[in-house]
Length: 113
Figure (cartoon, rainbow, N blue to C red):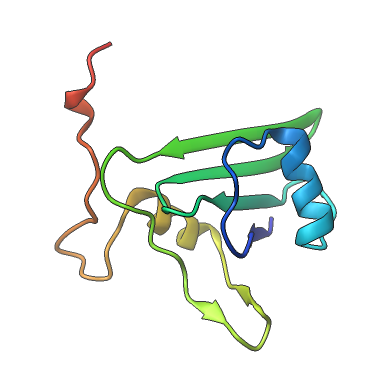
């Protein structure tokens, strides 16, 4: 499985069809089973993951109420962001390089369902 982070900002109003176009036209990739394409908005408060799997495409979204997503390091040699599963988890969960703390996130107890 490969993880591809779309460089730049993404309009989060885009749905599956529009994001597929971004993958093909802007990123230069084909939607292949198992690959995950990652999109982040300008403020780094919303992330979308487009995942190709058997039977279709899946779109995941997470919006932060507090804090921002930290971007992975840019690799100038490959003109991309080097991403693996662990890098995605670190970014989404707000895990800091300092293992004593995490980046600011809204606590789930503030929501009432």
